[in-house]
Length: 327
Image 1: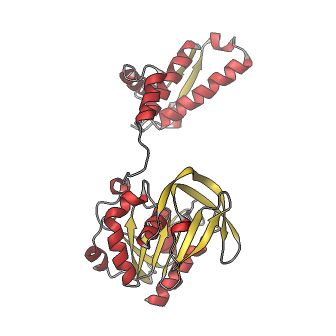
Image 2 (image 1 turned 135 degrees about the horizontal axis):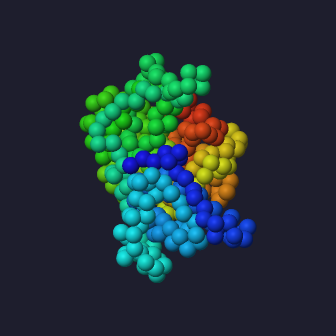
Image 3 (image 1 turned 135 degrees about the vertical axis):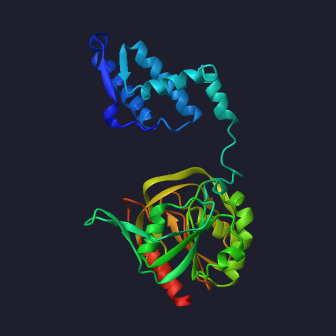
C-alpha cells in the first residue's frame, strides 16, 4: 500500500502548545520520523516495527496526534500493536540483536540475483530530454554476472557501447559462453564474498584462462580477487557514504568515491601477478587491482554512483578499451 506525502497531516492538541520550546522541538522530530516510517511502511523489519511502537507511545503521551489515511498511519499503528507482545521491552530487542550472527558466511547474492537472463540497453539520464537515453549503438556484447547489480552500472555500460546480457550469479560456464561475450562484468552485491564465491569462483577461473577481459566492482572486485588466489575478510569498520578519498597509485590522483561495503580484499594476500592500483586514504585498505599480464581489473568502490561523485567514470572507458583490444 502506497501513501503519498499529501495524505499525511498533523493535528496538534492545545496541551501540546503549552509545552516548552525544547519539548515541542523534540516531539516534532519524533513526528517527522514517524511520518518517514509511514512513507516506508512497506519495509517490514523487527527493529523498524519496534521503533514505530516507541514513537507511537511517545506521541500519544505527549498529547500529539498524527493523522493519515484510513490505511496509512493507523494501519502502521495496528501493525505495531500486533507486534507488542513480542517486542514489549528493550531487553527483548537487545536479545534479537545479540542473536544476529552478522554477514559472515552469508550468501545474499543468491537471493537478490536475477532469476533469468535479460538484456539492458538503457543509458544514463538525459537532462535535455528529461528521461533515460535508449542506446542502439552497441559495439560489444558482454555478460554481467548479477550479484545485486545496480541499474546505473548497466546504464554506464550502455553509454560506453556495451550490450549487457545480465545472468544469474550461479550461471554455468556454458551458459555464459553461449552468449558469446567479448567481456565479463562482475557486479556489486550484498553478503560475504567467500560464501557467494563457492559456486561462481571456479567458473570465473575458467573465464580467466580464456583471457576474456574482466571488470569487477565492489563484491565483484572481492570475488575476482578470490578467484585470483587472494583472501577477503570482514572489516572492523566498513566504508559507507559518498565522500571516500581513494588514491590511484598509477596516476597519483585522488578520486572522491561512493562506497558501501563491509568486507575487504586482504592486500597482503595478493600474488606477485597482481598489482594494487587503488588504496583508501581513510585507512589504507585495498580499493583496486589489475593483473600484470591478463586483461583483468577491478575496484572496491562505485564508479557508477548516481548522482555522484563522477571522478571514476573513466573506469568504464578503460573497460571498453580493454575489450576493444582483445575482441
